[in-house]
Length: 297
Image (cartoon, rainbow, N blue to C red):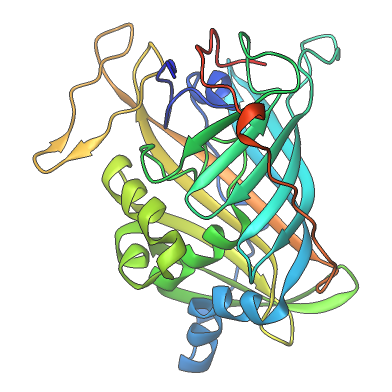
């Protein structure tokens, strides 16, 4: 399969907006935070384990970027089975300048080590799926699929540092605790569960900045209700992300001859824990192995 390389990975759903640059702080932060105590820090770093005990949930996602000075958001809704590490999201790409739908919704199936996408891009026959090995793309599918895998987002919190407690708010009818801090992708990868260790290790190598500011909201059972993470990547004018190797970031230049950092804010919400999640995997004959003409659907 031939895939055009774009910001953050191999030309996936949100590459068009990532290549234009993005930024902004993690959503919903508040003032007056105090250092979290040891029990509170454990609740944050163990968030992935707590989700695993919850079994499954309905989820929604928002990947917020800036394109040409305008904020745009890729939204997704669906469900995720934390025990089986499988889920399905339907992503809606931004409308055009006059509010017209430009792209069909993208259906994504998330599984350990692989991402399957329908309505993936130009050149893919109708009804066919594209399969991507998430251990081989530079960001481990944290952003370039258009959504962060809900359990991988929580696994990132295993590397949380400088955690502060910002008080309580009411969310989805539940009183939740708001925490804020920074996590490190490389540190999280070392302690992540085996199924996500490969993708996170790829992300640790691929991001030029591995520290990720976050805001997390936990309910009284320690389950994540909302998680917002801010990723930083280096892109060139052509939309190619700078990968990081043993000697530092590779030399990528924009149209003016200089690489630049861009930020992507990924937010995931979790609700209706225990809701059954059925994922029907495509058969081999339904997977497209030919050329993808464009990153856009």
